[in-house]
Length: 403
Picture (tube, rainbow, N blue to C red):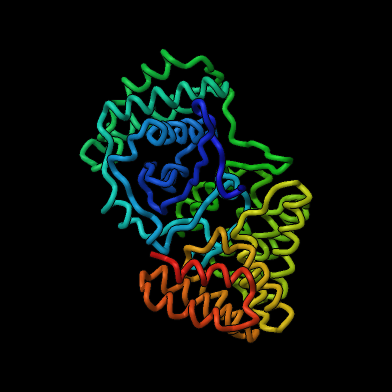
């Protein structure tokens, strides 16, 4: 799936689900269910993709070595969490954070109240794992080396700050381990990578993150160091921040003209039209986005299909509602743990007169709210409809048999 990525750091592949916390501290951590949380502050301070690879390898080490068992965090009950693929993160798309289009996480209090830190032995074990994993992938350790040097400087400047890395082994020891174990020390680090001819630029990522955090001051500083080819993207993002949607759309269209095969730009335009209330043009650009992904032989991110479904619902005619319900039904195996998702299905189905599907959607909502008796009641009502679709019949039966 495009929303996840696989990292081969041992004898087997790990399916990793990266997510972002909108927070300025330089921090990353892992929880159960293979989630890796990366603070936006960390990403804003990266100077190369090799740094990101090293950090992710370190966090994967905690997962692979079983350290995560000592600080399990359940993220399933937090409605603010959304899956984020590294690939989607590094694209050019822009979405708001108050709906399922978004890819940035909010509500950092949840994390800081729940998370605890590993002991120094576990941190050293994860460091060793990360270097061995990078060696196996023939990846340079210089990025990780540079990152820990930055941490060392930061800790000296903010010695009294309650920082996540204060509990880690000191940077000097970590640098010793990296330099002694690393087999690849290529200093030609990358701020630009390509995946299936889609260019992923680290500077674009920083522009995007600063836009999410509404940090106009840092954006202005970044503007002084902009690559020529990123100026149009910057212009679109800055116009968006200044609530100039027309200006943002016009800049995004210019960006699209220069990058005709990039699906993320089409998604970005779709999102901007959705925010502007032009749902017809939004759905057109979401369809275009999906088509571009398929032409590149890439499975589209789930959130793009969801955005398309929501724009079709907003058009509110029978044809668009039917198309939307079909898309939503395809997403049930992926999005079934979201109350908001089932509300979308329920509303759409009821508008189309599909009462049985609407009943099942309510039953699913009640199940997620742990109102089991009510869930079974609505599931039983759904099964009384003779025209109930097989998909909903199976789900209703499962809910009735739920223990």
